[in-house]
Length: 515
Image (cartoon, rainbow, N blue to C red; front, top):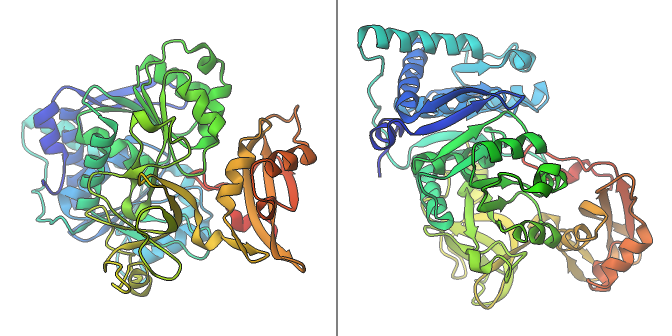
């Protein structure tokens, strides 16, 4: 397996094929970048980083909306053996300062609008840090490319010696409770996640996707972007989601594969462009990040698109479980079975391994598992199994509860920590949310446990209506739930909200809901 900067090999393999179609916020094409040009851009970016003092092991941060510079920095860091650190620009200044203070990047490339988030940053060890505006940095890189074209002199630093287990990327988890943790992703995770994706989705160099999910998240970087590059495909890069714009780009650029979360797919379904189907060539749509209503799955599948849920996480890559096309309807609602290089073990509450059908915490092994967390040795140790009661040592404890059927298909039940106990019975909110979200007037739901003198805890549901003109009737929703759930699972309270609080990956931030 090749280590380091992929773009040298990709240019040899795919040359003049388009790698990136860069579009502006109106959907107009700014530039079309081939694999040959991407290689040159990465070489020049690496040279610019060296000029700014970046050495092997240093961290390089970017605080910006989706831009080509993210991808140039990603591979330039691989060339230098540095660590790429994309930072969530939607965070508040203290949160960004925490991440920078924890990871201590020596260079921070920042979009001007986000300069207030990084002002005052200096490494706590007293070292030097360079904060540079992204447009200024882009001009530096362009000047080096121009020098190369004019003189023929190479601008590329030599490839640093890196191994499969060396860290390449630090991705900070969403931090819905407490401070976020920086997951250390080694070269092997990115490569084997790409392999898993190519095999599971039958990707080819003719495939194309729109990348609109943020590149500071594993969904933006690794659901389709890096797998597309690994196979010579193309990404259409835009800096945010608008349903009409994404569908227009999908049709115009003849994109074949999409990724999104339930909310984005719901928005697309409501678009006149989706209803007309004009020019769409999508063969496959992947959905993750939150439970997906069965009605949404059926809507896309009925349009001839293979629409399937998946499952993944920052620490083990976003493409862990997979459904084959033949199973997406038969097993609708399931996330699938383990991908090619994934080891999956399900562990019951008493610590024993589930054999066959059953329910328990999903633990994962294989080359896609991360190295742990930056500067967090105790949390790293606590995140892996220790080899007790027949559970193999070294598996990542995901904290997600899954239901395994007799064919080995896994359905995500809930986060282990989100479960509450009502009248002695375990209630998994995601199971309830899935049912509530199938109601024709509900876009999404979030369920939490609240104290009850009689039952210990009961459910409170927060529901987001699809259409303000068609309000959710609470009594009707509860009757809908009672027909589909055991009585102890039916929420005792329902709160209708305009919008549920979400983080950038589309996950509902339950800690912001009133208990």
